[in-house]
Length: 284
View 1 (cartoon, rainbow, N blue to C red):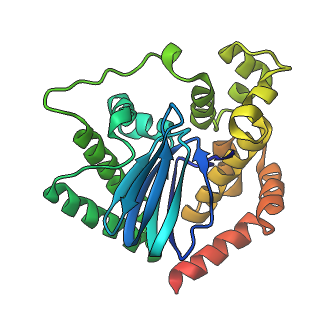
View 2 (view 1 turned 45 degrees about the vertical axis):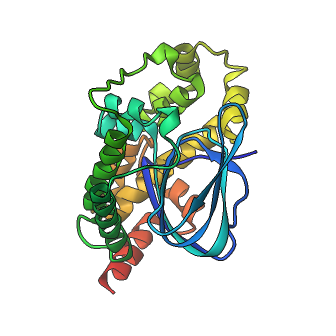
């Protein structure tokens, strides 16, 4: 079973398909899927491996929790917005209370909203799409605010009157997902992501932690850390005018030369040329 990982706290994808290109799969993150147009069926497996079929049409919205097997089949040509975010993102930028609310099992994946809530969701999605297709100054910041509003709106819809969800203790949280969250949280602190430090934190042996991570996330631990770090650096290269020395410092590289070498290897272009290309694209 293919499992997809996310290398940044948030990712926004706009896709349209006649045939959905991915079969049954799962993620290590939350995915909010909004149907802009089209019809089809969404398939999801619950914790007891029962397969559930949910028809979709324009304005349908799904919230797919981490480690949930799912897929789409298309009846008529469909256009989607996929809003992807890590559990750590919700905890850091919105709060643990909301994070735990999103895990209420009987409420996902299909989201039931009032007519007023549907209109608010439609407007927020439109704002996010417009910024995604017409990047300007502060686009990422605006998208983050609108995404946060969507997440909170959906979390609120999960709760009945006066219902309370208490955040789970770390000991009750799935160790594999917590390991992933911990890496994302400390991606700027390489000393905390050394093998010996991670083994001590998660009570795993140095011989086992690599196999443990690959078993859960289908890629090596070091590969995941490297991808996360270079994605963070890419975002700073693209969205800021920080020097390579400062970006290297912020993303945990030993120096600017190390960052430039890794960036060139990953993107096939130097970070400064990458920045210039992005500026030219924004100016069109």
